[in-house]
Amino acid sequence: MKTLNELLSIVSQFQTEGNLVAAEPFGNGHINDTLKVTDADGEIKYVLQRINHLIFTNVEMLQNNIHTVTTHIREILEAKGETDIDRKVLTFLPTKEGLLYYFDGESYWRMCLFIPRSKSFEEVTPELSYEAGKAFGEFQSMLSDLPAGALGETIPNFHNMEFRLQQFHEAVAANAAGRLDEVKELVDAIESRAEAMCIQEKLYREGTLEKRTNHCDTKVNNIMFDEDGKVLCVIDLDTVMPGFVLSDIGDFIRTGANTGAEDDENLDNVNVNMEIFKAYTRGYMETAKAFLTPQEITLLPYGGRLLTYMQTVRFLTDYINGDTYYKIHSPKHNLQRTLAQYKLLQSLEANAPEMDAFMSEWL
Image (cartoon, rainbow, N blue to C red; front, side, top):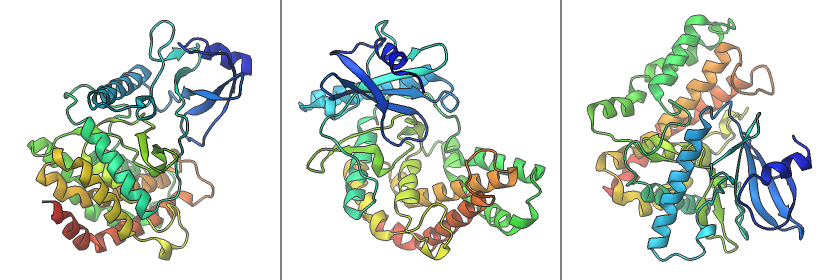
């Protein structure tokens, strides 16, 4: 990380106010480097981020996406007569040259206002799941009238199942780490579901499923709450891009409704928490139903199976390739992740009739 003087020099490139004297690491994000910028009184005023341009290779598109989304939400909030808007949507600062990011010759940086008197949660409860569902549903609803082409794909093919299976088939064919015999049963399990798990791309080509503006990282800790536990806004907008609504509800089910850990060594721990699923879905439908088609509503529980299957495929692909993508903490870490995700998939499949019946209430 840079020295304090170097960081303050970067801060000075943005249109800030006040006497800013410190920039220190902040939060626990895994992708970008995040720092809190404080004034002489020790008050946090801004959040400075170094963008990971190895993952987000088109920084201009990334920042244009975020600017488009936050501007659109701000206009809707203003039209509704909302107050305290700077706490209800992220506010990014332009540079002194009017740009959406600053490049220091090595790295790309951005700054936003710090949201005072706010907090986030890590633990997933039914109550928080309901609030998260409402928050992400409202987020998608506010962005549902963005014109096609308004946003680019910050990570191309991020939730494209056909693309992930193509990567998987290439890994199996190459067998680079010589591990194929060890995982033959898992490979067969993936292949047996492959056609059923590519429904969204097929329906899109047929013109019966449209792309929406998605968050693509729907976790409880990507929502800011006020002192009273009421939702302020959705944060972490790097992966906001065109996609299918199945992705957003599916990713929350995969992560939030899992009774075990993503890499749980005790597979008996891993099942779907139906209370979490129902709470999130209830909240989501309260705010999102107006723009969803009957087909999308019917397919929402399938989204949980799809995203869990997708992650199973991605972990196994990396294990077959010799662990070249995900960081691992033991030689068989990716295999353990695969087994845990596959167990969750089986639990979701077993509970599919109940999930589908619950969803039918909104049709």
